Image 1 (cartoon, rainbow, N blue to C red):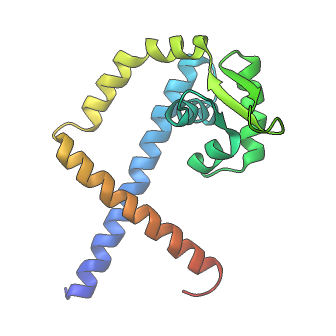
Image 2: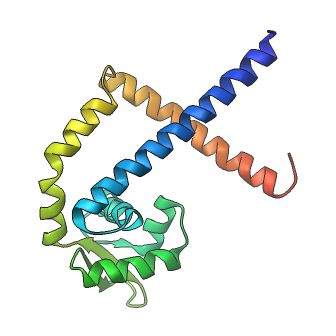
Length: 160
């Protein structure tokens, strides 16, 4: 095999590994969601709110951007999560037309109950990787994510 063929093979292997990882992570998220009696997308919304909230709440647009979904989907699902007492939704102090969301005490307590299982899961997932290796991998994956967004944009406008 020449260098171009080797690179093409390595790229295809990488893509299939990502597909496998994505599939397994979906199953993991479904399991966490089922433990709380919610759907996988609702679980991801709770995780995004938890990740993004700096103590002042987080906007639906920020959650939608983090999850790469339409803001209307986030609005619909967060209303359901609010009715289930997992999210608090309040008007933004800066502009009452916008909603700021945060986890409720109930959500924090339920997520905390899962923490031991989540730590064990992470230990299994990242066994053999130290912090420096994981940091290196995250930086490379972030670069690939940015590049994949650019490639997708180019493909959609017919540049590629």
